[in-house]
Image (cartoon, rainbow, N blue to C red; front, side, top):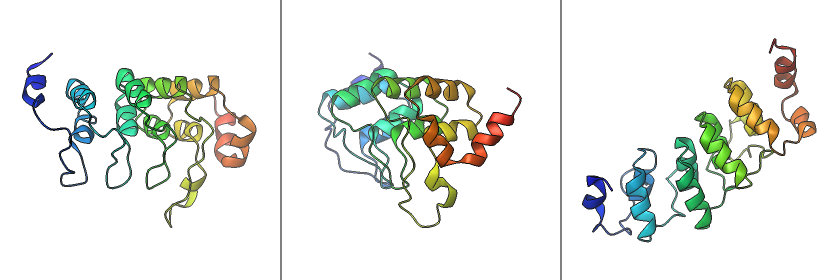
Length: 174
């Protein structure tokens, strides 16, 4: 283990949320401090903690693509399908971050590739009808697009989600 592990070994894992609604575990995940995150989790950190805008530990881990942490959080009971305050799931966060390992890990754990963003906030407009697949196409994430196509993707539902985007993608020179 690195020197970081020794520094945090004696810290309590129940430290309250800091400025911005972050627990120590929530702070460690996006910083890719995976050894520290492992220490917090193995010492009882609240894996169900969320940021003030509803991001889960799994969403933060999925963005970075660390498959061991993703599996560990899932095994600890973190819900793959939990939405943040804008209606996005961990899979959607992995797609937005273009994290191939994050998407692979979540798909292997059974994340719903057909989930549609739920409009929880006024003014989201077109976002209310996005899926992980349409997000990947908009971001030109070809590797992610093919990963999602290989999963249990409901192509008929996609046509209802964003027919204009699907038509543009179909007509593009690929």
